[in-house]
Length: 162
Image (cartoon, rainbow, N blue to C red; front, side):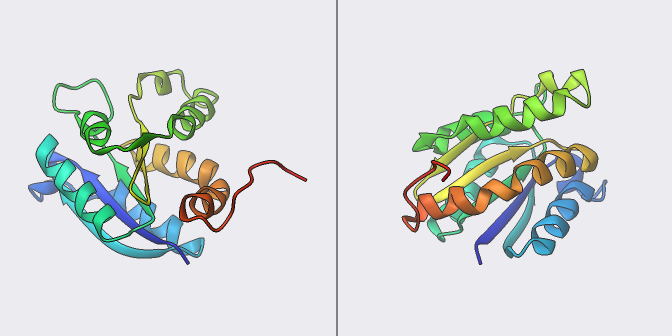
């Protein structure tokens, strides 16, 4: 069972002015799919706060870190930049897959700036900020996450199908 951290990036959520429906949706999906929620936090759209949590989670050996929010075009949206600044390696195929799948639902998916990276032994995936988009994207990639995490942990070594 892989450990998961969920980080919601939202000024209004951090200030208690909006309920965090996207973070709750992620938690619901991961728990229904056999993952263990290890940490859950809400931070403001501040690069240093985001980076601090991503570093904390990866230093705690949490295998999968899922963020929601802060991936759009607003001047306050800095989640991808914070994520890239803590990265050891890129895993952009995951974000590309989410974007490509989401494009079959809405053309606005092309406005996502989300990224996916590896830091230490943690996979960090930026998800959109809406509960609907979170569910669509996370459900789409989730069946591949076990394999991705097994490779990252050294428990699997091949991606080729038999």
